[in-house]
Image (cartoon, rainbow over all chains, first blue to last red):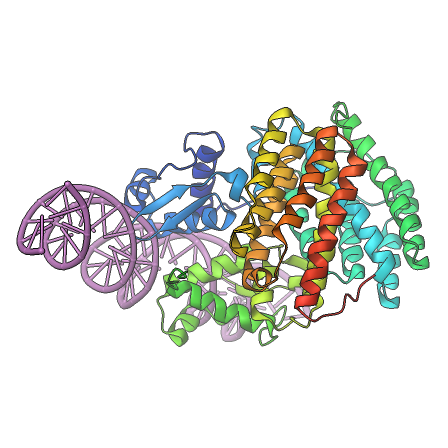
Length: 239
Length: 239
DNA sequence: TGTGGTTTAATGGTTGAACCAATTTGAGAG
DNA sequence: CTCTCAAATTGGTTCAACCATTAAACCACA
């Protein structure tokens, strides 16, 4: 199976370069970046293209731009939004396992919250969609497809909770996970077991039992976590 | 006390206009926006300026742009990231209280997770910073300043958890809350009580007792929630 | 001495026109 | 009906110029 050729836009390459310098500390918090005219000249791109990259950095909370002054680097611990985590994973400067560990802890927190809230607030139509997703999982599927359905399941849980915050948060998280999709997809899984675990979540949600839904979710989460850490040959270090 | 004068960039106004049309359904999911040349002409701005706005919309997950094809509207329930919630609040089309309710439920979930994780993983230096924030709260303070410190407290809790995901998530949430800062700041509060409630969270975190930290956090959260709903003259509808 | 006004230089914001590159469309060949 | 390829459409990039804001230097005056 071939991978689709990825065309990289110029502005995207520019973005990555500046971003890398922020993450590795070349540009520190408080520093002022060279002027747009200088930067564009140095990188050999047009000022408009460079500006596109700067705008995205600003939106991510990595820099702040003020007309007449310049573009300054922000402390990303204080300002960066959740989508930055994906970029950091790709730069893999922090890939000592700490970030992965962090992600799995968050996954647990979010998963439980979704299960609980869905059990409390789901409507009839929600149940149908949840069941449909679980039944769609088959053993002949490619791993990437199973993974996609697991995301859809989380999304449908969020929708079932009827909480806009949860819905958008799941979307944000999905983008982060997409960054290390390959790694995740390399983890072998028993699709039958996954289907079974998710089905029991749906069952509890259907009964409206928040406690059982959380328990079922925990089982599913720990199964995935165990497999992942085994694949990574990484110890589960956190409590 | 004066408010700083807000200068609105052209591209920002363009952004708002298109965004509004997406939220109110004028542009539906799947629709193709008019071409950049058309839109810029119609709005009376330069194509580059318009493109800046489109780029931001794309980054938010509201549209997708493909060279040669065009710019298409996405279903924001499936694609929008968490930062969109702020924009939706401002457009206040959904301000029937539902979103506020959603936010408070999420606030509870996040708050507890932070308290628990901080109690488990905090270091000595973290405690000092947490204490410092709590002590900084005084009764003579303006409400906006108290509010800022409450955000700082959450941020420091996230830092204490040593979980990058939590840190960035708090940053994202902060941006959402900033959108309805005025409303939040209009809620009268007993700063002494707040200080006391937060202090007991710190105390539990210091002892490393996750259970107590969560309990203390719950007290603090429900105090703020009660006040807010009273101010809004809104019933707490959700379970 | 310092307070406020003015000038100047640097920086980002916006504009306009032109051309490049990807995609879609549809007429025409087979 | 299907395939091919040229044309039209759309976003991506470049170039050059000018506008708006900011900060710093300088100056006048009390």
